[in-house]
Structure formats: C-alpha cells, structure tokens
Image (cartoon, rainbow, N blue to C red):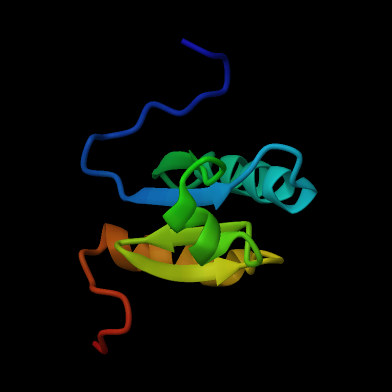
Length: 100
C-alpha cells in the first residue's frame, strides 16, 4: 500500500478526471483531487483522452474535465469548491442538479 493513500470504502463516489499527458492544468487538477481525497473519501478515475477519438473531440479543448455521477462539474481551471460540493452530494446520494 502506498504511504498516504487513503483506504476508501467501495461505496465512495467515483470522480473521473479526463486529461492527457503533458497537460499542466491536468497535473494541477490531479494534485488538487488527491489533496481533497485526504479529507473526503472518493475514488479518482484518471482517464487519458488521447487515442480515444470521441473523448478527444468532446474534451480536448476543455481539459482537465472532472465528472461526477455522469455530470461534468468543472473544467479548465478547476473550481475545487464546486468539486467538493458535488462529491458531498454524491456521498449523500443526491443526483447532481436535484434540489433538496
């Protein structure tokens, strides 16, 4: 087990980070997610869009893109407050965009 890697319950939300190698903003977003993961349990699914024509077409000009529960919650310069709120909503079982 890697030192500092959190042990996550299986039911923890999955946060997908779409990016590509050599993308500075993607590296920053990945570091921000890992830091947030230390206090808020969630899985990070890191997806390299290179080589996938559909993902390249969809996200190349928007990366990094963060998706939670099938909804894009942040892209480009990541808004960590929005990401945190979306993770909390996912942990509580709320659907993004659904009111209380």
